[in-house]
Amino acid sequence: MDPSRHPCAEDRGAVDRDEELLLAVLNSAPVVDGQREDRLAGASGRRLARDWGGTGSAAELDRLRHARDALQAVVRGDAAAVAELAAVVDGAVRTPRVTADGVVWELRVPHDDRLPVDAVLAWSTVTARLPGRLRPCANAECELFLLDRSRPGTAKWCSMATCGNRMKARAHAQRVRD
Image (tube, rainbow, N blue to C red):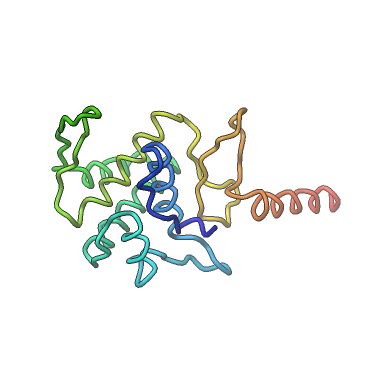
């Protein structure tokens, strides 16, 4: 499945939805044939936003692109980008609503800010629940991110079938040359 294209997850648990939303946003700028492709632009961006409950408006996609870039920087270890994430959620408010099933927290933000704020909140939830498991692919030519669900926590590549095999083949070729 295309890493940036995930169906809306209404019937899945909130945790799975957070993981999927976060990876969909982080992986919306893959390298294809050596060129970075922005899948938050044009029709693909509108489709991704709508799949996740957004409007797909130009303003929303601009804000989502800004949130994605800040999230990518933070995951790569750029501490300065944390301030950019703070700006994304600035003014967001969660209010409780009691239902027969329990307390539901409702996010109150301008409509075009909802999806970018959701993405930052998903990052916060995922990194708190799975510390150290969200990381960039170890292939320097790849711009994708992975959520390491392996027991030992040693996954390196976004996909063993693509980046993993490439990197192992390169390492083998280097050993043969040396």
